[in-house]
Structures are given as C-alpha cells and as structure tokens.
Image (tube, rainbow, N blue to C red):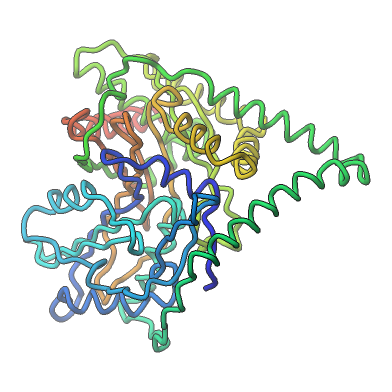
Length: 454
C-alpha cells in the first residue's frame, strides 16, 4: 500500500480527540465454543489475527505529521510493528469489565491505531473479543468489514497466502514537507480552475446550484441548536461503559412492515422511546433531543476500503411525544424529507469543501461540528453480516457496536445485525451517565411497545 494522506474528514476525528474523548470505533463480540475439540487459546487467536493482516496493510501503518502542520498527517509503514502491542490478553474477570476497560483507555499515537483485547477464559466457555480502531482510520461500516476479515464463512479457517510484508523506509522530513507543499498547491490549482471549467461548460452551473442548495440545507440543519440542559451533554470523563440490548431482527422487520417505514426509522424511533422512558425513570420531563445520524456514502464496490466515507443527517428525536406510533411516523417523515432534499449529499459536499479551507479554519469547524451545541447524541444503524461467521471454529454469537463519544456527549446508540438478531450498543460516559443499563432496558421496552402495536 502506498503512503496516503488523511482526508480532511479523517483528520477531523484526530482533531476531536481529547483525554476524555477517545475517538475509536469498535465492537464487543462473543463467540460460542467450537462444536468439537477444545477452544483456541490466546496464542492461537493472536497468531490467527497476525496471519490475516496481509488483507489490511493499513493495520501495520502509523501516522506521521507533516512539518509545520502544513497539511494533514500521512500513513507510513511502522518499522517497529509488533503484534504483541496490538493483540492483548484480557485480565480474567467479568466480560463487561473487560469491555469497559478496553474502551476507557486511549489508543497510543505513534503506533498503528488499533487494538484487539481477547478474553479466552470466560466462565461460560465462550470467547470474548473487543476490537477498537481509531475513527480517523475507519468508519463504522468499514470497521464491520474489517472485523469480518478475521472471520470465515465455515468453521474450517480459509488458508491465507504466506505473509511477506516488510516495512518500507520512512520518508524524511524534507520529503514530507515537499509532499505537503505539493498538496496545498494542488488544492489551490483546483480552486483556480473552477471558473474556467464553468465557463467552458455552463450547464455545470445548474448542477453546482443544486449542490449549493443541498449544502445550504445541511449547514442550516447543523446550525440549529441542540436541546440545552438535556442531561446528556455535561462535562466528560475518560470512563466508558457499554450497555446492551438484543432482539430478533424479525421484530424490527415486523414493525417496519406494519408501519411502512425503514429499519433505520425503527431504530431511531425505539431510541427516542427508550430515551423518553429513561427521562421518566429519572423523574425528568422528556424533551426533544437532536441526533446526528451517520449515513454511508460508500459505494457497493468499495465496501472494504479504509477511511471514512460517511455523511450525516440531523434529526430531532421526539422523546416528548407519548404515542410510539406517532414517534415512528414522525421520524419516518422527517428522515424521508431530509433524504429527498439531498441533505446527506449536502453534508458530504460541505465535508469535501472543508479540505480547501486553511487548516485553522478546518480545526475551528471540526470543534464546532463535534460540540454539544451541534447535537445531543449519535444514533447509528450499521448493517452487519447476514450469514454465520466463525473464528478458528468458534461461531460469532453476539456483537455489539461501539460508536465513539466526542467531548460533552454522554451517550451514543448503535445497532448492528448478525444472522437473524439485532444488537444494540449503548455506549456511555460513566461519569455523565452512570446508569446506562437502565437506558438499554428502556430501549428494549420501546421495541416491545411498537412490536405489540404491530
């Protein structure tokens, strides 16, 4: 893999990171014991992961900065790569404690930005795996695809080619600086050529006007203030807890079919219902919350590519609405209106345009977009594999997504699927939201409420 520079969107997740906001995406997975023979031990699992790294060379690359911060950092091969730094054996104990410990610690910069924690001695005989990858490296969908690289469609592992990887020589400071100068000149040249291209092809003005309208809608929505004093946007800590819920996927499909919506609409509606129930449990008046909803712009042919290929939609979660059907239909209408209005494309245009801005402007916009004024929480639906998958003969039984928290955000809600089940990961700041398990139970009750009505 050739060296490549972070995009402005990728770099924004580095910019949003702080001691209390570890910007890694991840998953917590549990595997059933193999049908025959003893379960694999830690050393076998570590060697298995190492054998698959040839499928994803970025996992042996680290980031280096360009002198004077002229442009965004560059990926280069890590000459000191050591699998032992990235695949760790969890301390014996409760599985939930292992997950929380893994996600409460930051990834170490100066190394490839990923870790896998393995718990190979759980009391019920299952094997636990926690994976985390910095958001500057992958988005949620790519994280699912890359996790699947470790897995096989049959209990018998697929044989891989011998790994012949050798780290290429690190570029020196002069090379990095010259590359940065060339990149800035390229951006300036592209901007300078735009009037000429429009003059030569006037019809492009119509397309540009349409993009401008889409972008204006996205910017306008992002500038609408989130609900203040919601209780979900206080001071942050580094502590994290993953609460969870799971249901048969057929339950969500039945709700979708009965009310003629999408699965994503159902996820947003049960999140709103769960949050409403949580407010009531805390003796608080339910209020609307502004959610950022990631939308993949990843083309079907490049599902396994690294980097972030996402846009977003902002939508109000009607937690103040007592009727669950009205919550669902209102969200379906709002999401449909935003998609038809091109807001995901407009947000994508805005993020693309950000790469042409001076770096201080990029940083200021990044901090603004990640602030609690922009949104209260993230709700993300991440499609998962629909067929059985195995790791060294152990079938993947459960997997809960982990959607990162930026500063002053107490919780995120992610949902993914495997086989015929839906798995919700409620990822919370332990200081701001110490009772996240109550929220996961409320989300399950919200699903049951809509399922009964369907």
